[in-house]
Image 1 (cartoon, rainbow over the protein chains, first blue to last red):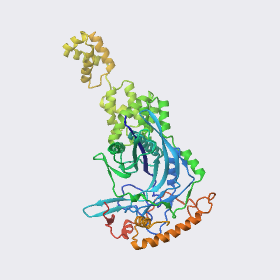
Image 2: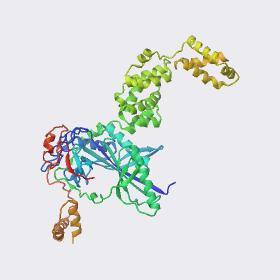
Image 3: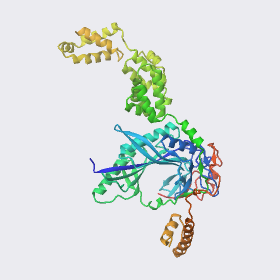
Image 4: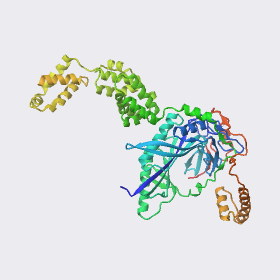
Length: 477
Length: 94
């Protein structure tokens, strides 16, 4: 047991899925030509006036409502001042004193332990542009397409005590955002980003240790590894009698290490003040009630319901509800299927999810539709095909979109249950393997699986195993 | 003194203002006067007054989420001291 306790707080930035930027009518489309979606407002021309996109407070408030926050009916935009070429105005419009949402929480589960993580606040802000640095040309190239894309920043309390808890919290947040349909959750494209504040303290100590802020964490795996590395680094420092310095550190994914971003200490003096270009945002209580009424069933509720209604294990329920498209797929297949929903869950978790992961296809777009998956399982249940043939056909069916019954018929994959045909195969196996037959009769009944394997080979996997077992037993008894 | 010459130098640096060393005392004095006046205002009891975040009386101006393209890229880049038809170009940062 370590003598130190890890303390983690996370700041998550989520791009909102609006059509236009937060303060101007430029498109938010990702991957456009550089500086294609830029106007006088988001390029910081003097004398322009930002006007708030109506969808932004709605989405921000919905995230707050989904995480038990209080929605502040009055909130204010503030200027966060710093200089960097991807920020043409010299300040980022954000919220400081009066954010739109405060005091929420998110429940997570790690190793069967439920834990509630506090949310300090959720606020609205604009994203910055992107810089490309060229050493060869001794210049930096600025693309402002992303400048002004709406973000919400979700700030947690320092409630997490391990990298696993931090990842579980992030996955839950991402899941909620996807359910609400307000963020695409893509970590690689940067539409779901996370900074981690990490510190350690001796077990039993109340006061927090000095924290380091970790950046450049663009996958769940990076979050996990960066925190683990940082905790070990801080323990080493303290054990060696040195101090942890409060600083921003960048994660290097290739080396699995973090390193200091020196010389940015002063940049943290942002001199926030209310933005005089924007009037306070006052929400009508009726809007908030309407948004509350529009909330969908959230991941945690769906998990509980799946376990109760479909008899799923906790582990499967977590995997099946992480993304709404997968949850909807499972539920549609379970409804189309007359057998136990747990069987559908096994196929979705064991076969569909890995296949989607490899092909990058969304569950809703899979050509093996929920109804067809139910059809495939029914073919297995009624003995038309073996489980093995079913599993082997799975990927093909995902790619082709064929009707499973048609597919099995066209390829002659139906299981052979005809006793006469199987009997001939069993006879052949018995006559070709006299030594094994001898041993079996002498008591080595484990050889049953050997005979079964031989018959399966002859039948190309299509023999009905139940019938074959009976035949072998009859012949060798 | 309300604000020291060192603090004035720091704020100037944060705002990228090139302040001559021999003017620090002068500005510290002037800014100090302004802060002193703020202290005077702070003597008033404002406990029952809601903070004013904007001198404008109306609130909540919203815009529908409908994309509109106002300028071509050439126009957007046109005012930049340096550009290549695609990007704004600035002195190398990293």
